[in-house]
Length: 179
Image 1 (cartoon, rainbow, N blue to C red):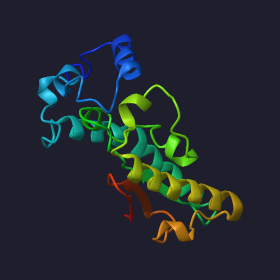
Image 2 (cartoon, rainbow, N blue to C red):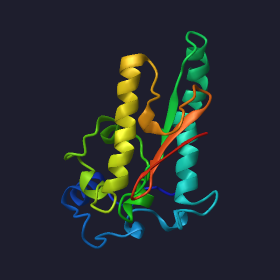
Image 3 (cartoon, helix red, strand yellow):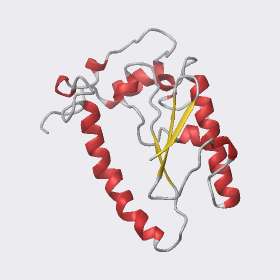
Image 4 (cartoon, rainbow, N blue to C red):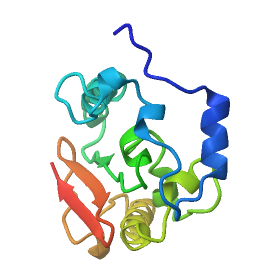
């Protein structure tokens, strides 16, 4: 559309992210980040989430749907996953959600300092976050060892593509499913 999706510049984003204390009450509001035409974020078609899903389908979904069949023609075992964890403190759970690249700390079990750690990781989301990370780390290890990401710690069978493993968590535990 014609409305910018940004209300603040990069310098402000980085300043907020760097200085944020996730254990305090919210120090910013969603209205400071997202234009009102995209609010509430859950509004079908025009809400922030619907617009983000549309961009995701264009940039990531289309590529995946074209690339994976080509790979499958060369080898039989292709695994795909989707990362859905969005248990950051408000308003960042709605602003960023499960953004591109936010799965990397989970896959490598490293929640140390990075630009968005102060707005992402809290004592409240730690149990679920660590359980989800453990499942992802074990899957990555199993894949490196055996060429198959399945392992007993998943608690669910990860089938080959076109099925997709969905990695998510509640505040207290992992929540894995297959779609």
